Image (cartoon, rainbow, N blue to C red):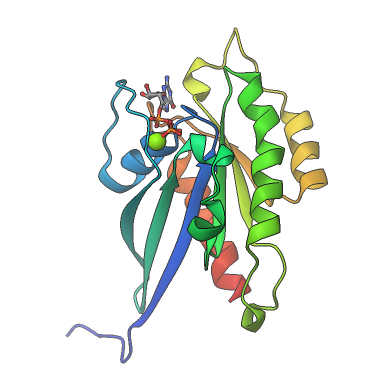
Length: 187
Ligand code: GTP
Ligand code: MG
């Protein structure tokens, strides 16, 4: 007969998805949560939300509350409110537009100045993963410098970077699973 775990543990985590305009934040979330993709660009106004429920292990369920923050919000004054109580973040740039990579450090600085882990988790900056998105468009016109990105992550307090494509559904699962593993270890 079937063995049921005696106790199901449930976790709720707030994860931020930030980065400049049009880098693919909404597309990454739509791919991750609903497995859909559209080439139509509808810029996010303010913030959107999505929930992903993950059966992490037989006795552990994780609810990921994804906060999809509009790129234009970097110039607004609401990010402090949006960042509140987040335990991790994905920062997204577009591999075809170097300016969006230049903005990554600005997003990270904004994040670190406005949110940190709860004291019960030891405080400190929240874990952040960098997503180099639109990898389907990278070669040959926009090659990605792996070593430079590795160094950038090490120098700027990113756990790791992943090359992703919301269009091709590449590496989004992997990146979020990695981030989640870090969160679960931190708690
Ligand atoms: P804001 O809400 O304005 O901050 O933008 P965003 O970061 O949410 O970008 P969004 O997901 O709306 O994507 C912008 C455009 O890029 C859309 O036309 C998407 O179809 C396209 N796009 C997103 N991800 C990819 C990808 O991996 N590959 C390609 N080729 N296009 C993508
Ligand atoms: Mg958006």
